[in-house]
Image (cartoon, rainbow over all chains, first blue to last red; front, side):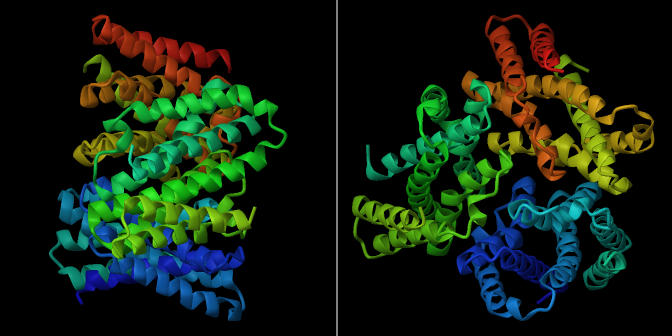
Amino acid sequence: MTAVEILDYSGVALFAATGALAASRKQLDILGFVFLAAVTGTGGGTVRDLVLDVPVFWVAQPFYVLVCAAAAICLFFAAPLAESRYRWLLWLDAAALAAYGVFGAYKGLLVSGSPIVAVVMGTLTGTLGGILRDVLVNEQSVLLRREIYVTAALAGALVYVAAEALGVGPPVSAAGGFAAAFGLRSCAL
Amino acid sequence: MTAVEILDYSGVALFAATGALAASRKQLDILGFVFLAAVTGTGGGTVRDLVLDVPVFWVAQPFYVLVCAAAAICLFFAAPLAESRYRWLLWLDAAALAAYGVFGAYKGLLVSGSPIVAVVMGTLTGTLGGILRDVLVNEQSVLLRREIYVTAALAGALVYVAAEALGVGPPVSAAGGFAAAFGLRSCAL
Amino acid sequence: MTAVEILDYSGVALFAATGALAASRKQLDILGFVFLAAVTGTGGGTVRDLVLDVPVFWVAQPFYVLVCAAAAICLFFAAPLAESRYRWLLWLDAAALAAYGVFGAYKGLLVSGSPIVAVVMGTLTGTLGGILRDVLVNEQSVLLRREIYVTAALAGALVYVAAEALGVGPPVSAAGGFAAAFGLRSCAL
């Protein structure tokens, strides 16, 4: 597995986990968990692929849907044990934002070749999963909490694109982008 | 008209009717009815077609838009006569979920060939219209009412895909899927 | 610049400005301004291009994203000076609805050749930016305020499509459509 593949699967699984935690807070049934996990886990990437006009990743490779379902089922049993599900949700969301933001920038750059599009794609895919989740469960969006949210996704995408432009090489660029986004977002948690 | 065509038009018209009832509850004007009916009636299928990368059904065949408009205009005059518009909304939504869920599974299977994608598509298209409607009118989503909602759409899609895999033939598979989804959902109403 | 190009850039910039004003009302940071401005400014056109199956305009031409960012940054400094940000938001939204509604009808007609699709596209792209913005900031949607909203977008699109069918020529058709939509919407402000 390459560095960007790790980011991709981590981003999907982590966002799916935050969706499942949101379902747990709303006391949904197990399929409600799977539904919210799947929408949160795949939502950002789906919009990314539609906008970039490439095949939607989970249609080309349905294994991603199973990853979301597995994350949801694990959390269906594990979430009631957690002391603060919302705390967990925020930290997992921070990691998902960092991973998926950098992967979004990678894919945006790969497909369009434009650094502006890559940065916009990274910011969008890093934040969209969490926004979709919050709209679906009718909670105040992370976007509105006046914290370093969009900023973190943008920073991760910028660091990745800049490092690639400097020829640093994918594993280091990806790690740098992830660290920038996760580090910044952590400051607000 | 084949069995799946009936499901398709019924799903669009029924979802459109639920959108019009939601507009009635919010006392919108007649074009507000048509707008909400059109978004609710075509929303799920639009996302389905975008994700499957096939032409969006109502662009290829604008007649669907007129079906939504007709449903909206009928309900603009009929809805004030109903004793409980919300009760009607829920029952029509159940039928729409069942019809459109099975049709989504049919189209997903046809285009992708993957049973997983077909089941996901069925669940998504059966539930998305209602979710979009509830987000647009700013009401608590059917998704969050802790009832058999996602479960019903999933059951309908599963029954249809399983029956097709067993070679049962479209009319019976479609009827079985519809009955499974509508029956399950009815239990919660 | 042709008449329709002016409508296109004006629509994007004006919607972006309303997104920035919404961010100002929620006291977001500067990147929250840029994010909301970009989503509001490009959202309607993105859905339009996806549904019409043409390249998404801001991926083909990333300059649009910079237009949104510039509008957001200007308003980050100017908005606190305004007496009533919500009043400004409504008037800018009316102009954006009129400009983008007519441009949506123009593009829908150009791509699909169908007047029904053109009118639906105009109505959708004129109203979707504002709806997305209101959902994201969790405010009551303009759609629900029981004012002439969908009606205005529809009127603008209809006038434009009818004038084109009569062979009036783009600059006059566009001006007529804009005037119809903006005039009608103004009545409610």
